[in-house]
Image (cartoon, rainbow, N blue to C red):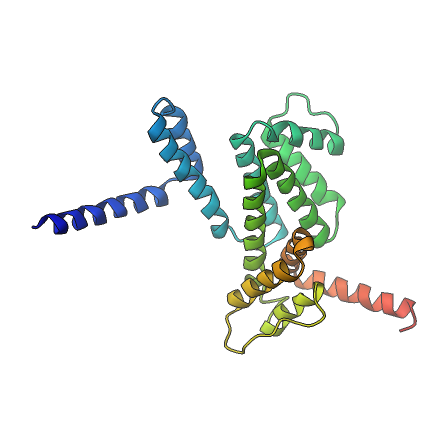
Length: 250
């Protein structure tokens, strides 16, 4: 075997080993390894990069099929953010005390759970729950810093896209997805009959970022709420709309 051929073969094996390593371990695994090997600076930096990579990629594998699913994803992400930065825990604990009262001898995980349970109980509509769950996650990310705040916004946008794509009950057609654009523009988003739901949902999000960048967070939250609505939520919204029109004599 010539030297270039040997080099190529070694490279393939190394690439496969790296992919296997990344696939088989979580961000928490890499963080634990980083803590153990912290004295070896170069190796610790590699582990930190792998940890951050997994955290950035992780949300794409999490699709909140329900409000409850979103609640669990937010809980997990807030706890991970607290592990990454000490500024997160005091802010979340302060929020918990404001909402639910003092927390003597409570773990941080219990504090996060109490906040989310409280928000779930006091709000009845999916939109309100999504707004508040996302607000808790944004609060935690802002405590860590701008880079993490942007990562969380990207995370929420991907969740919104996935929720829209998967919700074939409330959003059964391409037209129903395109209609969501009327939140920030006068007309639905143009689309082609053969376009995939995911491609259309991705274009919808990009259109919102382009035309309404000053309302980006609000629109992301509203799109996520639309994607998580169920048939009963749609019926309730329609009834409210009709009652409002009747009250105005329309």
